[in-house]
Image (tube, rainbow, N blue to C red):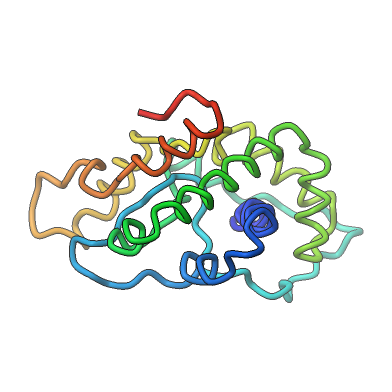
Length: 198
């Protein structure tokens, strides 16, 4: 369920950038491991690849039992992002901005067209509409998919704090700004006539 809306936003962005398949392939593949060179340019979508239709087929006669929600245990967690090598983004800045503009438009569209968004997710995944509708509503109402591509800074710091022991030698852990370059998103938002994210 976690990637349904990501798939929706990527599908919509890919449609907007159909001539830019090379960029989409690059963005949606695992990130290159280059120390200090990987940045997050927007905070709403993390899709390593569009997965094939899920093998999971729920029995439509039985309701699914909700065991727990991540947000109940770890509230305010930023767990979606678009990650790209900073050197690549700089070399391809106009393409990066075009992609982000498409992503923001897709996010705005999903917020304005929840039912159609749920239908698109259902069509792309093969998962019944009654499940995709609930997930779309949750993602949009909780701001997991923002309206403007903005990053939840506090949620990103929470992610750093949760993973700190495994990633860093000692405290204090770095601030999100070490990893976030919002300049591309701000430029995309400006070109769309939005108030830029901070």
